[in-house]
Image (cartoon, rainbow, N blue to C red; front, side, top):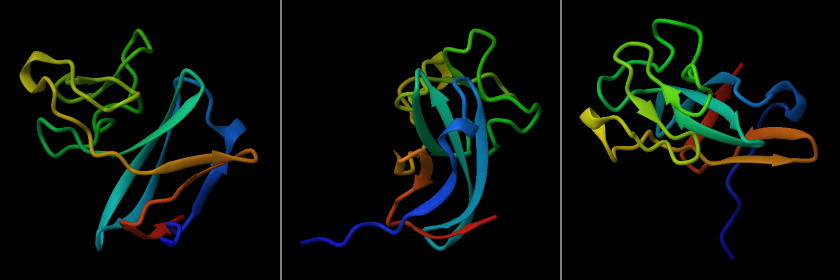
Length: 123
């Protein structure tokens, strides 16, 4: 039977409300990366915080990752827009490309990361 991925608790569920995000520094596939955790329509989603258009954090120019409608994730540098549920770009320039997902869990009032590619989460 396969062994479960290591679990890294990040925050209490109540700390991440709909339309908000938090960032976590981690070691992912042996490299330092920043993980973006968002809550949309009641569910948390996690992605490497890097736009597919250019290697910049989605919130590199402003402290927000949702667009003005609250329905999409948006890169603050060039405006590339993604669906929160899949990280898929719906912008013409990068249509169909996806943010890199990170496995996440929400159980017993806690949100955390549980991905084999993570070796450490830095606080």
